[in-house]
Amino acid sequence: MKTGQTFFVACVLSTARAFTPSGKSSFLGRHVAARSPTASVDGRLKMDTESYVDAKALESLEQIFRVQRDAVSIAPKIEEAAATVSKTLEEAEAEHGMPWTSSISPKYEGDELLYMPFWNWHMSFMKENLTGLRIVPCSNGDTDFSYNENTQKQARMVNLCLTSNEYRKIRLTYYDAGDNTQVYNAVFYPDP
Image (cartoon, rainbow, N blue to C red; front, side, top):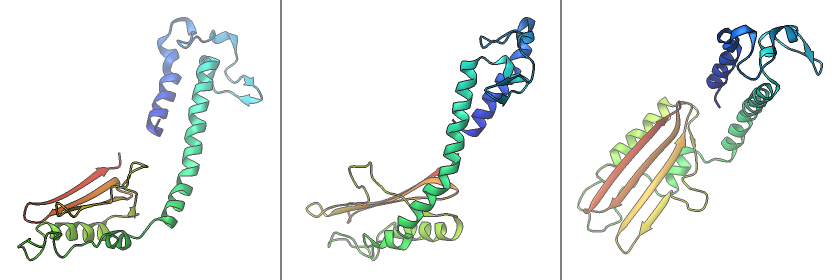
């Protein structure tokens, strides 16, 4: 649950009393006169609106807030650890010989690969304009999708997966099969 959603839930719960007759909560709550607005439970001070929320709903809300607080406090540590182990952009690109200067097929008649200028432009654009740019694995846990080659069919494919402060995932894919096929695909998933 995101912060905005949590805030919305809290607002809905705090305004629930306005739409219920005779001061009863719509959440199996207690009568208004049953508790003082700032009653203390377990040594904690309760706000006005909390007295209208039943114990089960209150417990659920507190659990949501705890999970979010813990997630917020651990997120920078995860990013820091990932940054120290990850490769640089140049290392990841060079790992499979990118940018390729020639095709895997010896019969390819072009001077350079058809879409390689687009790959190069995207790489320089990302380096110059994106903040916190870092490499992420191109795998599903079992299979690595960063490079695949079929020498029999004279085809190869490279994937480069990244993330930045502006985009949650960036994937660049180049497929080279000589004169038969040249494909370049770049996908930038925004960070909502």
